[in-house]
Amino acid sequence: MLPSHTERCLAHRQSKRITSSCLHGHIQPLSRRGAFSRRRLHTLGAQKQARSESVLDLDAPSTSKPVAQEVYQVADAGLPQSTPSGSNSLAELAASNPAGLATAAAALGLTTFGLVKLFSKGSRSYSNNVGDEYDAWTEEGILEYYWGEHIHLGVYSEAERAAGYTKKDFKQAKYDFIDEMLRFSGAPPNPQSILDVGCGFGGTSRHLAKKFPGAQVKGITLSPKQVERGTELAKQQGVPNASFEVMDALAMSIPDNSYDVVWACESGEHMPDKKKYVEEMVRVLKPGGTLVIACWCQREETPDKPFTTKEREELQFLYDEWAHPYFISIQEFERLLKGTGKVEGIVGEDWTPQTLPSWLHSIWVGVVDPWIVISKGPRIWYKTLREIVTLIRMHKAFESGLMEYGLIRGAKLPDGSMAWSQQEEQKEPVAAK
Image (cartoon, rainbow, N blue to C red; front, side, top):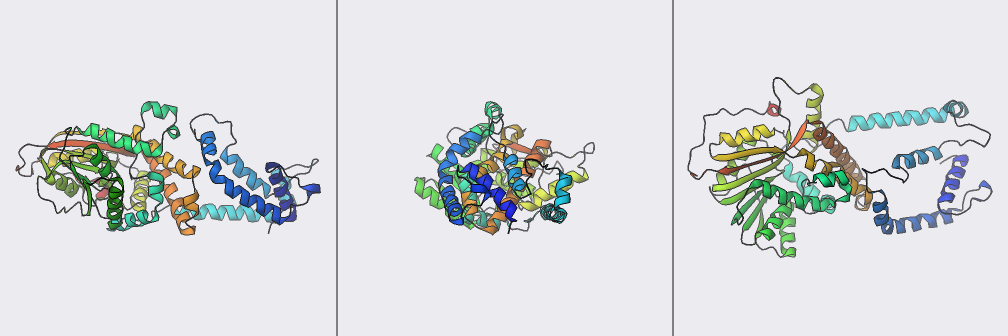
């Protein structure tokens, strides 16, 4: 229970917000405060749009009160307040209530230490558990609620980044990414068959199926729940040419030379054998067909620029938090494609600048609309907090150059029967050693 003095201070501050009076310094009756709380909760949802418009632009100077200031005021309400003739110096607070101040400092220190320790290591290291993790995310519904149908980053033009990324619709950024990835791929204008490797719950598959109604689009994933949800959404949206199947991308039950386009968006991160991943996609690609990959990549490690101890620790956290066995570089993907002996026109690009805003934008959509998380209970609160920490660390890793967002494309040589090339020795990924 708060000291009576603090209760009076809290009530007094609250009274300014609700334009009620705190007569003679006494606390409002509990019934009145409870009624206010219920009215406050009832109107928060209606206020969300107005609140979003007023604080959404993180990149522009704001005239509204900073969030940090609100936090400080709440914390300040828990401390003894000065009288008109008094002072609020730390020394006086310590002298007036040394035990309370010491307890608060110790609690803050222990909390900070505990959180640092708790979040210093990943909680979901790779152990053939990718399908299970995506089953859980799909059932929770939070990822779909915030990210929409597409579990991948969005794209932001230079003008959109200059204007402030929060001015763009977060979900639309993902549709724009698909269209930009398609443009980058150089795929033929009317493909008849498309394979989406690591399809999530099928947002990209359905988008491509709508764009190419004459094509058969198949999405594969390790998650039965994603297949179930993808199939359900395809039926709801009237997309009969999109289908989904549980299948291991490293051992696809698909004949050679089957697809005009093989599409792999943010699935390579989870593959424990990147070489086999590339070879399987090339195998099922038709001669003359297009392969396009989008993947989170770590920077190229060279003898002149090895990873520091700190960088290796950061990479290990990023591997272990979201069930990634390891990452490779954009250049390594290019080498793997070349090493098949079946791919020409290989191009790799770094799309970090145009995708970087997605990490913080994904946090912001939860800040302005937190209610689905709040309604899920403590287990989801903790899990969401971990996700936020990881999103921030991902943003920093990409911003610093430790990570790069890779787009890689190539076309299968017309002679689909060409033997696998063994002429070039494959470089083992540094992170796999």
